[in-house]
Image (cartoon, rainbow, N blue to C red; front, side, top):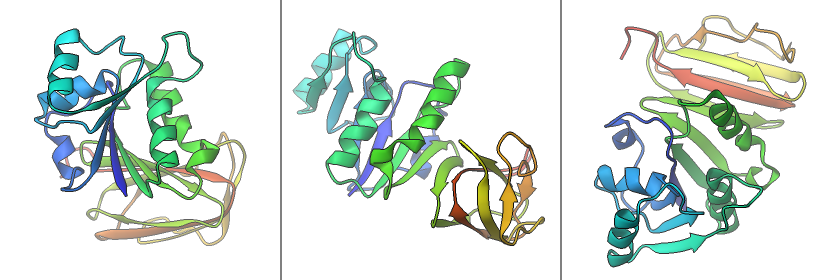
Length: 216
């Protein structure tokens, strides 16, 4: 099952069209459900404390058959964390998160760090921003990025060093290298064709992929 989670952060007006497919299970994380309606999408499920989803939007969604999973406002998790946990527990093998970036820095950082949740181990999760994407590699994982020559790819270790990093299809190739946590060596590499591959032996590696300024 492929899930689309729509959060209430900044998102391009048309960027969602690059990611949403027929048959996707669409989840609105609280106010993200209102954004889905603005895009012409009707979520199958809304989850959160409903503090940022106007009553009129709630009425429209309920009339369209959308299911609500409500949580108290005094909770330990953000609405996006609740949505990610719910999707993983329901068996989603792939999750694309829209509207998770921009706005407050603390929200953006927290949303990106949610990729490290243990419940997401074994699930392909991407945070998408227009044509760009952010994803997490865990030790033993690999990913093939698809884009265009000149696209920027940054590799950022999380929580410690990323060991055994091997890449192909990038200008600066790594072969079993260690990327040290807190250092900037992996920032702003470039794709040499429409595909690039990254492999990781051990650790956590954040992969940020998007067009170069002035690119596609």
